[in-house]
Image: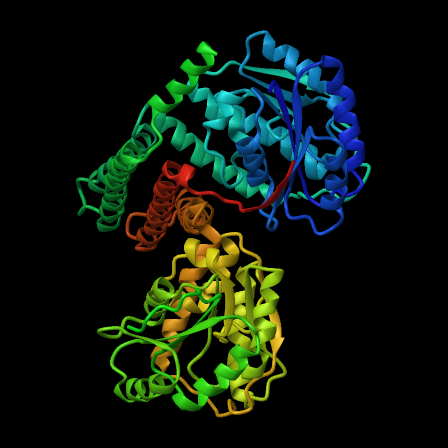
Length: 309
Length: 315
């Protein structure tokens, strides 16, 4: 099978049919062997019956139904795990992405890229709560991970199956898939895609994600640095605090005329202790990382299998 | 050990006997009537957690006329271990745990078991309640706290009458005192858990107080389950919150002291407040570092953590 289109759905009863029709209409002209995977993330409305109805008439449509609601990343992960195509396309289930863009994504993949991500350059969302945080978040993610993608939050992406199936997806990691795969040296392209305003239902996200994104970013940065330069992130922190500690120590001892300042010396000791602890945490992290089952070689393997396929 | 019957029972009923139990024989017959009303083939397993000579004697007497399995643990291991021991003996595809004391009306057992047709685990909620006011208050407070951090809305976690499918025990690990939170853990693993109203036993009405140690233990259990539910997959979300809070507080205090030194000429070098503010920063950064280590641990095991359960796949 050539292509799997993966769509997580959560309470999207009105979108199911139009979405299915739009995908079929977009992909049929390509004349390839494909499947559509609807992953139902524990909807409480008529999403599943609607999808099942369609699935009975079209064998290319598969519906994966979750026991309950787990969130977007697990839904994506389930779709990816169950997909049979060589190329996987993921997209949102709320009709904001346009399946018409799928052929263009595929075309870009054929040019030799491993991942093609969509960029909603004319985004139809609220400015304050959605667009501005998103611009800042994408800039930060680009700066910190070193993968400058303008729109990490866009679900419309195409992957070679080898790349994505080996990336651990948990919690809310879907935002960082391009960054994760960059360890393997994947070639990533970004193309402009259409974006429509919501027709049905309510948007399911809000501002509360900012803290989560920031924390995840710190995690990703640490993990990525462990892959390439182990310990470095802890060592930098440690170095900074050694220097701070040393400066304060000097300041405490400096007025040679009077007695040394007890307070400054204690503070200096505190920071030096912290620096030492950080270094030890780094060593511990390194130990955990090396004994874990995810290694750089694993990602190198992904890369080589992409090259050979 | 008694001889295995030719046909394996469908329903395994487990009664763990720990610190608290009521008249064993009376309860057994009451339960038996209830279980037989389900119309399923069944086995009854009693697990004795530690030395309960009186109960053992009663049960042995029962064994003369009735069919039941008795498991005795060599010492007191706790209810979770007792349940695990029973689970490994039980052969039924459906399991039912019942309290060793009056909690539910035994005649309602069939309702609990039939509820399994639509879910993986059915919990009894004693409703309407006829306890003393103090009991009800305790139960309410306990369940309110539980509800605040789990997406599973249960009203009566203290009722240990629960029916569930075998698949649940194959995936859910119980240890320590976590049996109380069995439904929450099962729910988190992706099983469908529902709560159904069951009449409370008319004999359960006395006033209950626990020793202060009991309350502390319950609180600690709740803390454990809180971490388990909320942060096992994203430790930095929690540690980061605590850590950045502490660091922020420390930074603000340090800044205040520095401003005072620079603009108001208050000496810095002999103010112990600086030690405190630095300590806060140091502590905060340590907490964040621990969270990061946690993240690394989770990440390296990410491929073993399956986050979802698929109900079915169409086509």
